[in-house]
Image 1 (tube, rainbow, N blue to C red):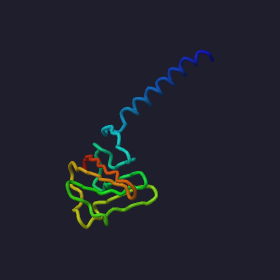
Image 2 (image 1 turned 30 degrees about the horizontal axis):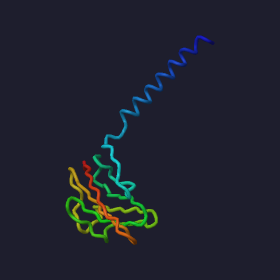
Image 3 (image 1 turned 135 degrees about the vertical axis):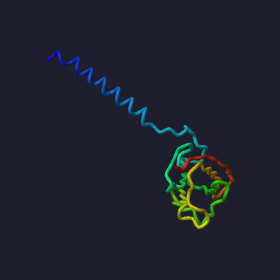
Image 4 (image 1 turned 180 degrees about the horizontal axis):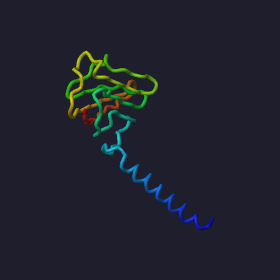
Length: 132
């Protein structure tokens, strides 16, 4: 029985090494970014590749409104879906009356924000992603 112990430890060590190697190999390749406050999330993530059905998603602290500029063109407010109470905005280009569907290549998004009430707190953030 004691002779099996080194083999068990060896097997567990190899398993751990395989898990670590797999985690490194399969980790996302997007650039590491920290978002400015009050943004809490954007999608597609900056520097990543996405599929043609990509929706632009912006999560922001409650109490702010946003504007989107995609590839240099402002997105009409009527085309933004907003979930009040959680600060989630979404725009799907394929459902847009203003824009044509996505084309393969790099696309740039700029989000502009300001407070809904109280003192102004304007800001902006720009990122790019790639459509395959």
